[in-house]
Length: 212
Image: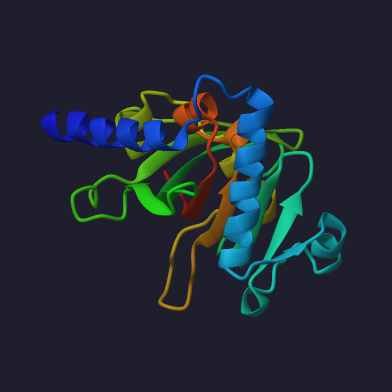
């Protein structure tokens, strides 16, 4: 519990640094966030492609060109590193998805939260996911989720769900298999609870696998 409380104190300090002053309007905060995302894209040498080009490429992004597709409605940018083994979550299906992730605060360009560290290596974030006629909903399992422990919310960031229609959710069977692997730039409107409250964007590096 002490380590979790310490983590939250550290996170609050980061949020305080990233959040805007009381004199800033919400529009000002959104503009600052948009500028930070654009600066991040330039700094990382990201090539942004349209949804139309993404679809023309069989819903893939060229990693060798550092391509990310921008979903205009969500404001989320996504790179598919690997589509993954297995198959997509079917319409009407509910399943358990296991995630390894790293979360970076784009304002500070620092690692903010991860379950890839040695301390959290035993915890794979577990999500219950449902595909209802192409619309995905999901929640974290409070007993197995670093995201839940940090943010005290079972809600999966909507930005994470943007990836699910395009990747396969399966299990590693042999040495040549790869889990679904995506990178996401997520604005506060589609982020976790404190990102939404404090209006800051996050970068995520996530793998998805099928649970039991």
